[in-house]
Image 1: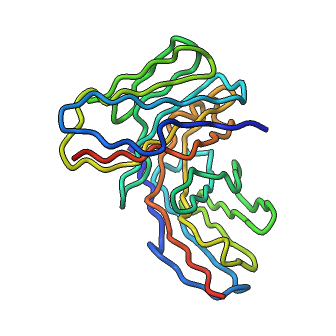
Image 2: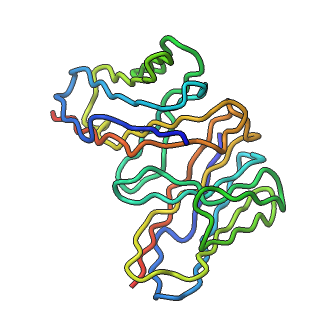
Length: 114
Length: 112
């Protein structure tokens, strides 16, 4: 088994601030993902990475940057936080990213922008 | 673009009574379906994955896929109060796991 760790658990920011979220996995998985979850909406893919230093845009990449520093870690940056924004950011990983590979999720980072 | 809809939005059942959740998708060429569970304040836990028409059982969870009717169901046998959570359906076309499309979820409450 393995585990996905996300830091911080809670993040409170100011409008316009640049905010960074971190994700670590010890599954030794190749592919990692960042999703955004809003109340009343499904999860939406922001960025994913199929290997170290790779980066692929998802459906919601505008307003975000990401970085796959090494195989085990994937970080996400909110480039300019929007006032009253409230969402949960979920990190996931899978073995290779093929269609039958299960994505395993971390506990999430809860963002609130004042 | 793939659309995934789940019904009902919320469901309350008594402990031990079968719970049935519905997921409808729009792309008939989809071949990769998963049900996840999310307890309040937690991440997603995969319950069952199904890749062909028919049934797939994992413990007390059974997924039933009917691609012709564009439905995938989740049946929960003898649910307990600890099964109260948000249940999410995820669908992807063949070839790329990254193109998972999630439904908005069904909020299940199990009363003792």
